[in-house]
Length: 160
Length: 160
Image (cartoon, rainbow over all chains, first blue to last red; front, side, top):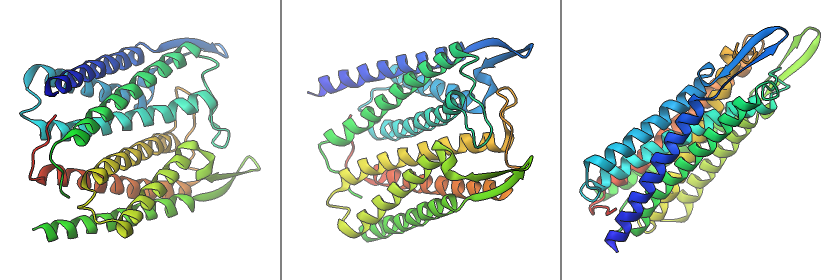
């Protein structure tokens, strides 16, 4: 039973690494140029702080999972790993939400604020951002499962 | 010792309720009208989905804390409360991040996307949003403390 749990955790950590690496690569490679009124306009992730934050957060989560895989037995540092998992899950949730908010303005615009949508001009850029957001969201869900598994299955109750 | 912990938890829950109520009220009352090129332009929180999501998330967190205060002894449902605290903390982090991303565009704009800042035209609206974000951020931090306290202080180790 303990071995199955450890294998499941290992599998989820590998999935999380895959999802975060995919999110970083897809977001970083998202640039597209277009001409608007004879002016060349290049859309890239580094044009917006929320997208930059997304890349940094996904990279941190990926690095954390990699370090965890290669350095420590998870049973020996159970509680510390759980606390760090919560921090990483928050970081991922926060970065996906911020990037999603900006991506929504990019897709739909905001007529009240006079912000026009840009996805009509740079559809490939928007597709990349959408892909990166899906991967980032998947990573956040995997971290949620990684947090909830030990909380549910721990033999001893937690006292508040 | 157990009584002190329970009192501290109670105090933090009251603080969280205060912070989330403040965030909701300050955000909901954030509307300002201004005239741009003879057109009346009204800035209000409901103009943007991220701000609406912020209000809903803060209200849910507030309701959850209120229900918890009046319905159950926290020691009897320790683990369930901890899991729900993690969910609420994620919800708060996510909503603050999304609203902050939009508020940043409102304040600084994004020249690459052609989105102009609006805070010069509606400074009071922006002040309200900033206040609501500060309160929302405080609520998220309080929830983080509420999660980390039992994880640190639990007498029994958690097994992964």
